[in-house]
Amino acid sequence: MNCLFINKILNGKLKKLEYLNLALNNIERIENLEGCESLNKLDLTVNFVGELTSITNLTASIFLRELFLTGNPCTQFDGYRKYVIASLPQLTSLDGQEIEKKEIIEALQEYEIISKKIEEQERDYAERRREERLENLKRMHAREDKIKQSGEKITDEIDKEFWQEVVPFSPESRVESHNMIQRKKHQTDKPKEAPQPRPLFAPDGRPYNINEPKINFTFEDSIDESLGCVKVLKLNVFRHLDTSLIDCDIHPNYVRVTIKGKLLQLNLEDEISPDNSFAQRSRTTGEMILKLKKIKQDKLNMPIVEREIRKTDNKPTKTTRFLEFEEQISLSEKLKLSPEKYKHEQALISTKSRKNDKNFVDDPEVPPLA
Image (cartoon, rainbow, N blue to C red; front, side, top):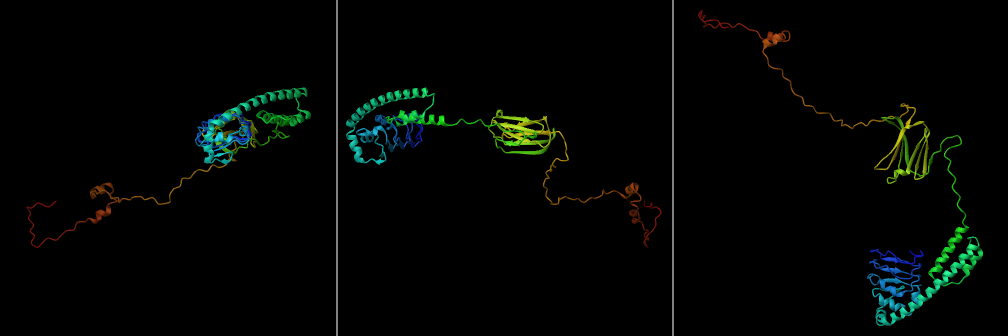
């Protein structure tokens, strides 16, 4: 954070900050660093620290080991190094020089005497600073009067006088030099010309294809159940972009989408019906989809939609087979049902007469067998 014309340290609540570089700024007092608990190195090179007693605000920074105050007015004070070493015993290096144990002992022994000298020198420096501020205000008012007389312009004479004037090195003189450079630069810079509007149509009336936002998109033919043959335009819009920043304008021969003031225009080969077209946006991905209905519903020119064929195994299916048996019925019943079908079975069944035994006696009283 160097060369930023910072005149006061604020908001020092960074607990894990270990190194803070504030070189080449306009800081006059060390303060508001109590919250930087882990501060290990502090660089305040070439600032305007004249209140050396403000160094005691760093006593709470117990992890502070390196401190740089080179180029500050306080380094010209008599007893500066001993006062800092005695006030901050946790330091191991001051202005790039290692602190020895002998220096710490001497500084602690002479601390009371040195602190009184430092306070007297601070008061003298504060008086000089008040005089410098008053003189600076007088010079600034005189310079502004000359600029007003010249018509709010910094002439070569005023510019030369400013840079040749001898002034003390102070925060005010540093800021004045920066402001003078900026004012001179703005005065010499030419005003930027307004950009010419981009042509949207060719001389013959054909709309140009324009992609100012440089977003990815797809444009293809499809079939919609309700609209029929349509052209589908998908825009990969940023997910967190508010929909109010998107504007769609559909015409019979072109479509125009404005995204955050940048234009996307596409020429259409087929004429479409703007009244039967619509746009919608995905809530999850943020994608913008435009379905543009064609006036000529020519399905022959539409791409063939391939059906998904479910993969099946070519293994033969196993089936269980059972033996079939006819119901057992008598021959008489079979003949009644189908005489011709069971005729051969009847032929197999034939009765043969058996010869009587020699000892057989035919008794007429015995009834015949049925």
